[in-house]
Length: 131
Image (cartoon, rainbow, N blue to C red; front, side):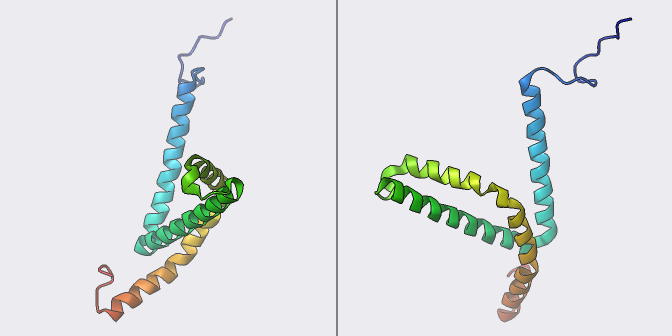
């Protein structure tokens, strides 16, 4: 006896690559949404911590890429823009394993940032939302 054929999507994976690409995109969207939910749960202090960490991360990556490009080419990066961008991308990709530490640092910084916002609000006699 031959088992009945099932249409694609009812228990069988499609052989078409774009369906796998579509499912990986939805997985990426879900993980980004979870990150946003966590950030929203931390409130304004979490947002400030996130912004500060992002600024720090990109400043460090930019400095490392600038230094490596200058050392490799012997001229400042604005004269070798393609080399600088390739180096920046390489350093950025190399820093991705540190993402969990970034999120942990953001969560750890949020209470301190909340206290800083409260101090600024009390100093200038503003509401916490205005500060």
